[in-house]
Image 1: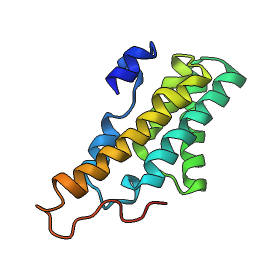
Image 2: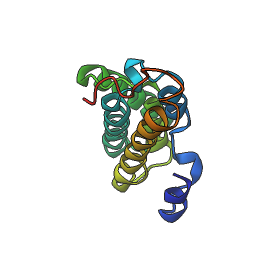
Image 3: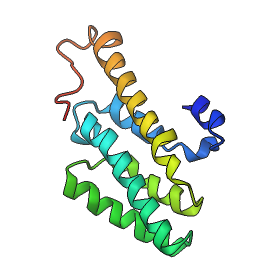
Length: 138
């Protein structure tokens, strides 16, 4: 993800996946750690942030509204992933462009899901008998 951040000129602090990694690898059976929540939560939260910044501009109050609306949107779509709550904040405060939805958010979420699959099923799966990630894909 750092490479995508550097290559796409987005600063590393704008890549909001640190807590997603902890959630997906540390609590792989939790609902927010499943692929639907991981990928969908990041995409929906970022989309909400982009819409809010388009309508309201990069103001602190707009960032607060964006985070609240993102939480509602994630709940309504069944993609609640708490770490994705930072996405609309980053989008609004840094006035990100629409490309932020694809790189680093979309690609980053997909890479994290791929890594989580390998980590949980190949690297640690044998150590944790019967441990499989994800519980369901979508």
